[in-house]
Image (tube, each protein chain N blue to C red):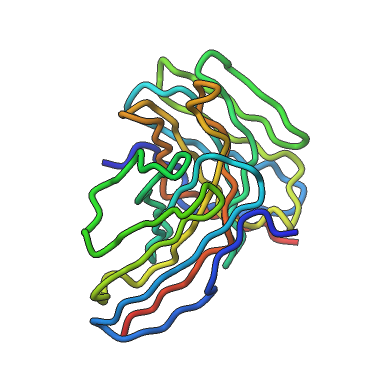
Length: 117
Length: 112
């Protein structure tokens, strides 16, 4: 059983297109995240949701729009894709820090490699 | 700016040797976590150390935390070829919501 799953695993698309990446977790976690990992392996937080509500929104172009239909899903939609969007995008989940007051370890999905040509 | 920075960027050792990786950070933290990433895979959580702890062990892993120096180290003893991966430290601190910030990682290569 995959704890955190993402689809698709690979995504190749042209500049200007709109694409979505889906993420689902079956761990019963309340908090979910999206990260971007660039070619130098630097991992940067993009968004964090807790119980379907946005709690962290880093400086990300508004072409990126996360959507959480329920607490087990956090999808990422990207409009007008640019070359610089090429990266590996990771979804993650964790127990809610709001409940215990402490940040917990995160469980990562396998990543989606996005290539914009 | 980046919170956690690992040192060295890359490390190559023989199987059986110990591997030590260091992490430095800039602001106050609630906890510090270490993750491993195998090539082409997602990150896997290894160990979490809270700001009021100084040392923690998990199997062949030993993590230390020095909040006065804002630094942490990860020691892998008796390394194995399967330990070959990138290792990331991540600091969790409050910023309107707990934010976990990852460093750029140390690439460890263990030669059989």
